[in-house]
Image (cartoon, rainbow, N blue to C red; front, side, top):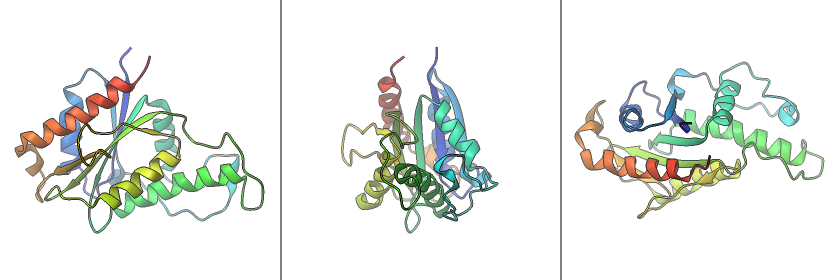
Length: 200
């Protein structure tokens, strides 16, 4: 059975460079793939209602559908562009997931901690951070990966610095990323490490 790989694209641009990079990589691998572009999804801000302690999130947007796809996948690839920080929609997406995690850990605000609260249990993920130049602050990537690991996902590191993932030079115009064969190869190697980590 082919591993199921879900790629989550954090860009605000539909079919931008992050999407083109991931699609090119996954189209040439022997895996079942699904690509979620947050640019096509409605992700509201958390209202801290606490109802996710026992149920799905009560907000009527695309978060629960995306969370279900994450649970169904064998491995996850996050491709996130760097703006001032990471894209705000991706940050809102992570905040929603982290809040569900937190509410279930403490069973709301006033109760004691719970052991089996994490949304995921050891499922592997890898991180691709894209920017026009390929230069991305390590602290931004570190903070993001710590949030993701806090959900119970296990990070597959790159084989060279910065190890937390791959920093990808995309250029600024849509399609520029495809001119950099080295960029595509570096990303492909990391995704292959992810796939090889999946145990069936």
